[in-house]
Amino acid sequence: MQAENGSIPCGTFSEDELVNLLKANLIIKSSDNYKFNFAMFTQEQFKSFKEIFAENNTNLEKMLAELITDIHKSFKAFVPKRLDSQINQWVSCYMHKIISFVAEELINRGVLEKPDEEKPLANGVFSILGECVDV
Image 1 (tube, one colour):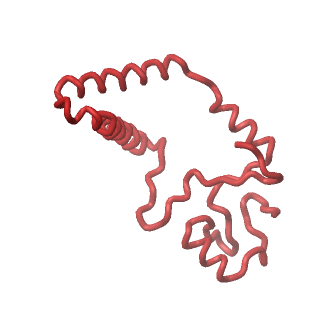
Image 2: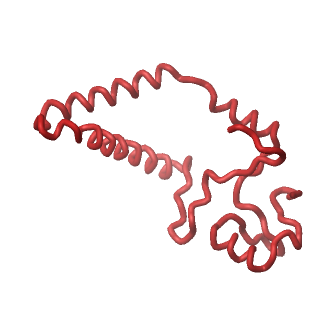
Image 3: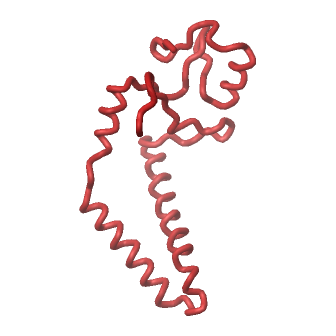
């Protein structure tokens, strides 16, 4: 499918399909046409995009592993032995709380977009044009 700057050529979708795509927040109405509401990559663009995030940060990974280990140890210190099997669940919940604080701060700084409560979340949706690739 050809999509110049994300614009959807007329006749690509039926009226019913357009309505469903609008409801799913996968397209948006832009003046007199529709546009995809997600990133569209060529094979080469996606490869370059993937390489940006391929970098391993062993220092950060080590710090996070130590943090999780320390939190696990602190839970182990006060949780009764009979509830030992539930510690990982509590550590997971605790870590998700920390993640939510970071996400909220990124939203406040304008780095992260706050999801629209009225529309389905389409962030993270993307398309790679061409043949199927191994992501």
